[in-house]
Length: 191
Image (cartoon, rainbow, N blue to C red; front, side, top):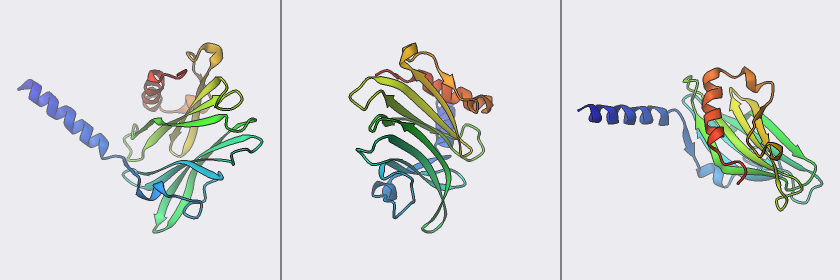
């Protein structure tokens, strides 16, 4: 009987957590700059992302292949009404060599850690020394909480074992920090 109650409690917890955010794909698959004014020249990744209160699209885009430098944008657009979206979040990473920043779409986490009905997420970006065929130099973890970026990273100098935080990261609520750090610490960052 205790085992049945434990299983039911765990399942109800999963169901409650899963209802906070919904990841959808339809519109985002064929998304272009005509649909949403994302900053990059080309879309790498886009996903529909709804939490309890808002319908959103998150777009990862880059500047043109072959450009002198590499620019990677992560942006969140909130749906205000049918076909009307407002950009509510944007952050940019830069590298002096094109094709040196790589978004890793299988290393993401979405959650309503703050239990306020709004979802937070972390995206991971790999930074290579001189393009994708060169050694991995740095791995970025970009946490988005309340539409603001909080950055952490690790580098080859520490063999990807020490994490460095920007000043803003230290201001995150403890529970949010802990959840994202648990996810971050489980990642294989050096491949």
